[in-house]
Length: 169
Length: 169
Image (cartoon, rainbow over all chains, first blue to last red):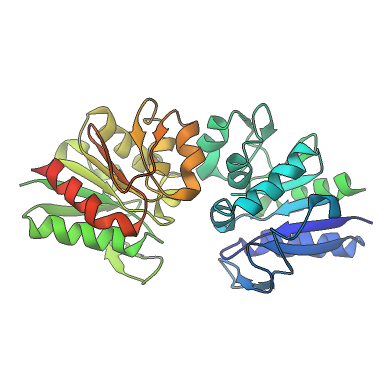
């Protein structure tokens, strides 16, 4: 089964972490939380979900994982100022490993400058940023473009999770 | 004296609203709060500052104002999904009226697609978005490019306010 890194920090969109992780673990996959600081407990934006960060972005290597989950909320805005987090996400894209990006998650990929020529969706507020990054924006509940699975918001979670699980199988 | 529209909604960066507004009013200018919904009280991200929105973006015209202040925080991310707010900010830029943008404020201007060929600064997390929008990013406490005054974060407020007041005089 697969080993998935979930990269997040404070003000993540609760359900965009909890629901995919529950589904991944139920399917037998392992999820490891990664963030700017190992040992820190980070808090969800809407419901205050607490998640302990197991590994710092500085101490992990994409080689140790089969896929990357990037939950949305305001967590990606905070992650994109962390060079190690940006480099970690960039490496998944460059190695063509599965990346699961929902809501504001593309912000991290924009800073990593890995969206040129790609097709994806994302939260309404960042549509122009996605287009300006050289990508094609599609307004659909889930978009699969090679290794990249993307969705717009929590309402898309069932389709998002289904597409992620398919990519992991 | 000048009449300034301050456009904001929930999770604005408290000091990026309170400090410029205090300085503008002390100098004799008038500030009118504009947001997605008139009559709503919006709340700051860090200190919970409460601000009542006087006018909705739909009911105001840039002709009624001499300048636009866009505080940062996560307020601009929320404003950029409001078509009327985007159109309001776009009009100030197109009419070459003073626009005071700090922190995440350029996000609203990116969605308005008015930054091509401009020079500005902004919060670290959105540097790539500013560049991808066709603008030149400069890492300085305040950047004045024609009608556009921009700063990076609350630490730049003294220089930001000084440059804004100069533009209003």
